[in-house]
Length: 464
Image (cartoon, rainbow, N blue to C red):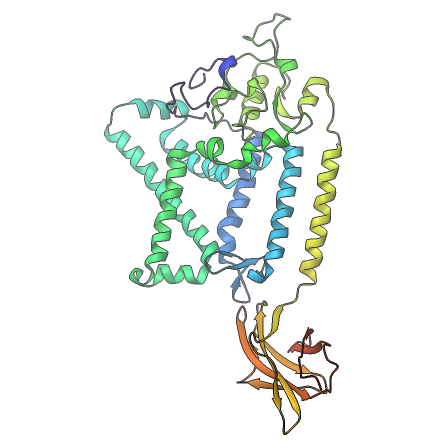
């Protein structure tokens, strides 16, 4: 049976895990191990291995993924990005949003059920610990409703201790994605007094993850997550979702031989195993449904027992349920696909042609030209900034063509460490009138690998 009763005519008026007066109802999802659950488990373990393993992998002394918002340093698949690459990041985010929209139009919330970290952590880690220590949904309910005994204290204490340890491991993993492995090791191995901010971040992240998975749970998907709210805009009757076949299942009733009854025997197993507590038979357009497929496995198991065909609940579109219509390539899908291909193509071109350094050349603000009357020469002063965007140290040389001469103020550029930026100044000098008035001059920058960039800038001089 379901954990609570909601009349079909009233199910849209409030959340499934809420009473009509606003009190929360704790959900005890039943456990069913079907074919889809096994596939989700294998896929989840693959993703968890990648999630926990990637922060430990380095390339040329740098992590392959880094999202250091505080220092504005980002690395994606060993390619570093800096604030100067914001246009690439913005274009990448636009591509990702269009991909999500197209994917949702086609396959609904398959991301939520199969790959979302919230679902994977909750169902494949925390929920498994809960089943292991406290038992199935009925045993958990009995334990929560029973008085405090030594057994209850032991079970609750063990469960929440493991929850805290797991939340601590997850928080440290996410912290490594932000600050990198080396900085994280310093926080862990050195005196905590020297890393108060890092230690505070660990504890705050641990508390947040523990609260989310120990108490907040399905509320993340039902209330907080904005992606679920997009379903009402993006989904249509051709979208592939977890669907209840009402044509075949209705009218529902107990398993009898009467011809008038549908295949649904109203056993409520689909409701009992749902982690958000919904009744999938009320329709597939319920925003609380995360597409986890638990109801499919549960219903298939029941159909097998009563000698009925599987698939009463399955992946399908609403048109597929109503009339057997297959998924069609609509104009909207075509528009999304074309736009996505265009943006990804532009982004790929920009990444492939992206230079491993970036230079900025400006005439020094507030300065005009300087004239040497004796030598009959004129000079302009310039500011040069070079950012090394590669994973290796680079050496640079700067030169100008005749009739100009470059004179450094200080040591010049020389070697620039990976990820570092160097600022310097220099004079450009030439004979007065040796260069056409108002015409820009080329300045060449070359690295130790032979790659060259030419910048053009103005050169002002007195009228002869």
